[in-house]
Length: 352
Image (cartoon, rainbow, N blue to C red; front, side, top):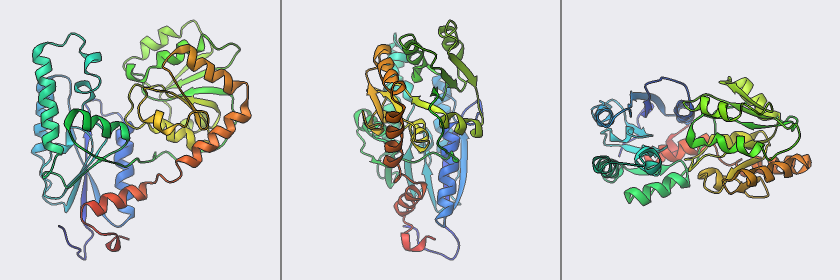
């Protein structure tokens, strides 16, 4: 166990970069965690390496890339998403964002006609992950949400302590309740098509504003081409994103099996209700049906019914949004940093 010294303990936050080098949720997570650890008196640095999932050979190379990282200069390390937990260090805690979901809960959807070889690859990944995240290689295993923890137990036989974290976005403000807002990556797992289909059941001129970019953007835009109420805004900066949250009647967040979903936190920070689905993963646990939003079946008509109820009564939307904001008030970066610091052996009384 590391002991206190005059110098600040050096902690590596070990993260993953993709081939695109785009700034997204993972990058915000790394920055938030680094800042929080620094804020409690630890010297935190980012240690990033590339992960390529374009082929199984590339995936194997990515695991080896992290396995070979030299982190000996650090007093403790915190791994995050796959395959960063392949690192070697005597004082290692894993705060798991997610494993490679294409080989987990999304396997059948991504590989509907998977060959025996592909299924063996999937089994290999499961065993590899279980070995890397198990004791005695790591001191403590955390998960960012109940969805991730349940997946770990079901597929890898591992138990993780759930510890949610907040968004790093700031400057939230109340505003009018004028339109529906759907932020995030335009990817099939986010089910933007459900929101588009729901709008066909919603009368009037209520608009749906969709921000973000992604590999399935063209498909979604084609689906919405005949509805002038649906606007695609593309990538927006943080200032614009906060303003869009502020003006929304409600935030639609309809993913499939989401690991955490900072959209929910950001909507609640803006005092806006969230409409999500019963199979949306962590958002369905964060949203209290009928109190901070709605948790409905993943069906266009059901989503549209929730939209109509909020559009008909803005005062209910306001009350729900305030309830959501109160529900997440206790989720802070400082509490996350202190729990991780203590798990690495740096006691609270030695931290600033």
